[in-house]
Structures are given as structure tokens and as C-alpha cells.
Image 1 (cartoon, helix red, strand yellow):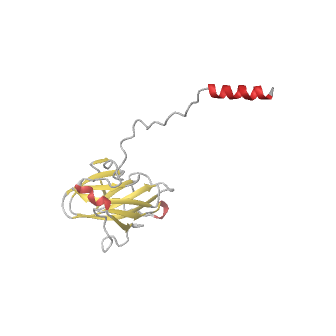
Image 2: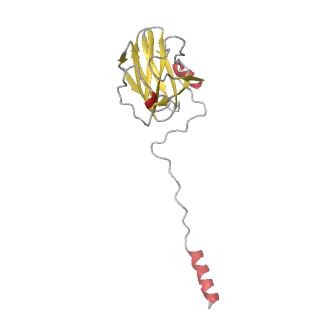
Image 3: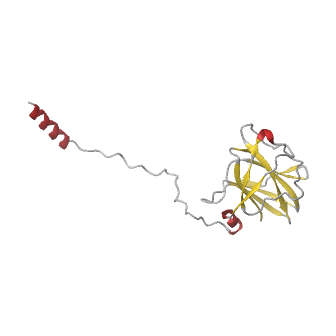
Length: 179
């Protein structure tokens, strides 16, 4: 009897079709894979060059003399907890206590369109002579570039202060270039 049951089980298992798990499909919105070294437009080429910088905790620090300005190379900025910051002008978006921010000067040598690029989500205000400069446009960086946000401002020569607020971590990469 045991032998018959075993033979019957073997026959049933051979006769049953086997089903493989369905192959996983790529998401419908998935684009081509990013290259290891993406090609950037000429004006954003320095995004691939790393430098490090620091941000100001509070307005009134020596920002006019000797404080390094943000430039046209991707710069990793160390940010500070919101409660330790004293912005020059209150940010247009209310800073959240659990987030990070900071300020960094930008020197503009000639009139034009200033582009500020970030690799992460954060609110930015550009301040000149005590007033917030309205942005002209904003969007994303080129595909696969690592640039998450680009904001553009019309500027004249002078020293500006980029105020960063509501960043999710204490580091952000940024660059500023004039078009």
C-alpha cells in the first residue's frame, strides 16, 4: 500500500505543470540607465568637480570679508540645524525645526542670469541688499546629472547671500553660475 501511494504521488508530481514566477517588468516610466560619467552641458560641466565649503550660521558673521563664495563648481556645503540659524531675511518658506540650513555668499561680477543648482531638496532664497530676489524660473537638472533642483535669478553685479532652508540632511551639494 505504501508503495502504491508513493508511486501515485510521483506520477501526479510529474504530470503537474510547473509554473515559474513571472518575470519582473521594468517600471513603465523607467528611462535608460544612467552612464557612470554623464555628459553635462558646457555651462554645467564643473558639476563633476568636487570642492568643499562651509555655510554661515547667522547673519552678521564676517560675510563680506574673506568668507568663501559659492562658485561654478559642485560644492559640498555643511549645513546647520534650523534652531541655530539667524537668517539675514526671514526665508519665504517657514524653516522647519527638524531640518537644516545655512547661508553662503555669491559674488556676481556682471549682470546676467544666475543659476543655483542643488543635489537635494531644500528651499533657497537669494538675498541682495536686505531684500529677497524673486526667482525667474526653476526646474530640474539634466537627466542623470545628480542635479535635483535649479533656480534662476536675474542679477546685477554685487555680493549676494544664498539662504538655504529645510534641507533634509546636514550636507547639500550646490553650485552657482552666471549665464
